[in-house]
Length: 144
Image (cartoon, rainbow, N blue to C red; front, side):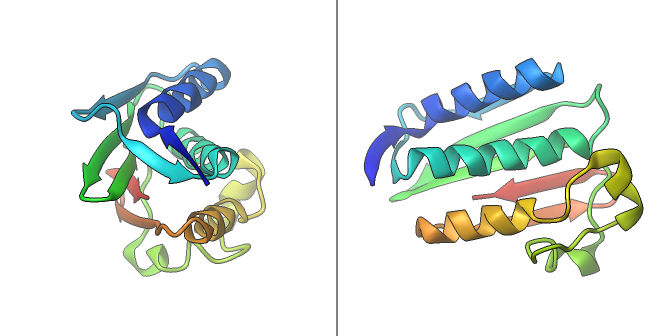
C-alpha cells in the first residue's frame, strides 16, 4: 500500500458527492497533512459509500460533515449527518450483508443492503475498523 494524504482524498470525494447531490458537505480538520497508508481506490469507495448513505438518509437542507483527525498512528474519519437515525437494537446489524433497517424505504432509496457490508469488508481488509453512533431523529456518525 502506498502513502497518501487523507485530507486530499476526502476533498476529492466531497467534490464528487456535492456534484451529484447538490448538498453542502463540509470538512473539519485541524491537522494537515494526515498521511495514511491505504489502498486509494478501496478507501475512496468506502468514503463514497458512507457519504451516499448520509445523503440518502438525511433531509436535503441538513449538513453533512467529514471530521478528520489523527491519534498516534491512526487516522480517524467521522461522517456525520442529521438524518433519521438508526434504532439502537439495529446498529449492530447494519454491517451485515443484505440487512436493511427499514425494508419499506428500499423502494425509495434503492440498494439491496450491501453498502455497509462492503464498507466493513474493505476497511477491515486495510487493517482498520468501522463503527456507528446514532440516535433516532438526530442522525448518525460513522467512524473509520
